[in-house]
Amino acid sequence: MSAQFVETPFEGLFIFEPVVWADDRGYFFESYNRRVWEAAGLNVDFVQDNQARSTRGVLRGLHYQTGDAAQAKLVRVTEGEVLDVVVDVRGHSKTFGRWYSVRLSAANKRQLFVPRGFAHGYLVLSDTAEFVYKCDNYYSKAHEGGIRYDDPTLRIDWQFNLAEVLVSEKDVALPKFGEHRTG
Image (tube, rainbow, N blue to C red; front, side, top):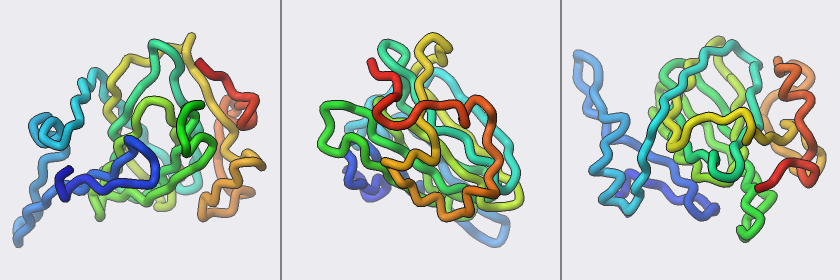
């Protein structure tokens, strides 16, 4: 695997660090190049791009898609900073029920590749953040799944006072880990 791909303790979950060319005019980098990914053995056919803008303290997630609508994602931040969190919901995985977090920002330009079978969410740490991500499958409401961000079993360290987060009613109503939808 290329030096641009940083392995995590979770099978299939990678941090991508693009090569950035900078000079006194600014910078340039390829945020995605299929050939680079294929050379690393990652053959992903992205079909949908999404973007969200949020303010400090907004927490979105933890979301995933099940069955034939499961999605792999390539996530990044183009403005601001977020704490990006994933939870392994693959029942067969040795890391099932464990979580992983990484700070993604416009400054560090890191991206996280989230394979199918992970719940995903993020918390905005800066005043505002633009969050952009590619998906390898189309969204399907019928295949939505989710887990509460403050699940007592998972004990995710969001590095933020959870009493101050802004969460949608939909995300507050998500089930706890173990009660979440599978398959």
